[in-house]
Length: 313
Image 1 (tube, rainbow, N blue to C red):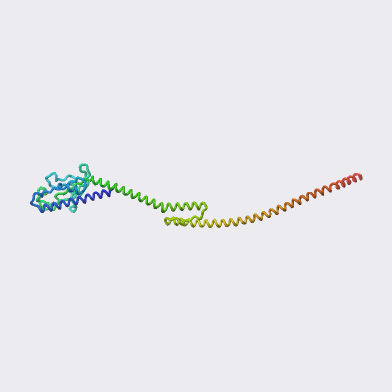
Image 2: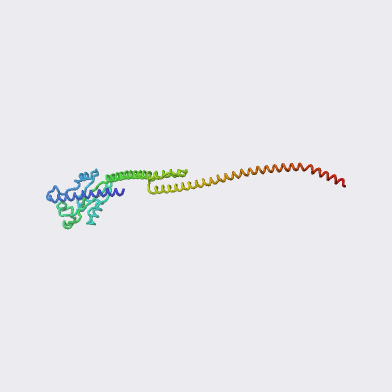
């Protein structure tokens, strides 16, 4: 906003400088060429106001005023604000212009002023206005005798600044929106989509499908490197799983052979147990038979022995 104000002020200053200097140049040319004609004396800049307003291209109602330090006419006498600008010009002879922003009739107004120096051509029209009490034309020649003041209401330029700011805001907003949209689309295409594909491949790998290919993933260099690293990891996992499966198959075969051998030994053991049970049964039957067969004779012998013992007693 500050830059827009500075541009508007610079534009006002440039146009005011052109108008004021051209007016002085034209008036000097006219006066020098018609010094004896009263029709061209006291050429007042107020007569140019309508053309100046047309030059600005806006209905801004600018006002011209010719200022004289020793003027006896109230319309040419400077106001307090105008005296401040004239004092600036008077204090610094190298300063060719002065301007300020004031409030005139409740409106912000750009006030521009260029000095008028007392020259020989001025005395024919402004002899009484230029020389003060006790001063001659030679005393004031080359000094600042007055100024051309141009007041330009800034309402139109303030509106222009606001319009420019609004246009810049809209354009900037559109550019920001387009930039965000472009970045979003580019990010989605170059980053989000490859990462989504890579996530799906990793999810499939987590389910045990290690044959997924990452060659169709396109994107920035970092994502491609990441995909290649996952590919290397998947190949290593695949090799590890294959090696593990081979070891499991070997161990399973060994366990199967050991199981078969154990089964055969178990059958032989069961057969031996059967034979042992049969032998035990035969032994029991034999002992029972022998015991039965020996019981009666032994009993008879014992009885005979008891009888003999009784007889001998």
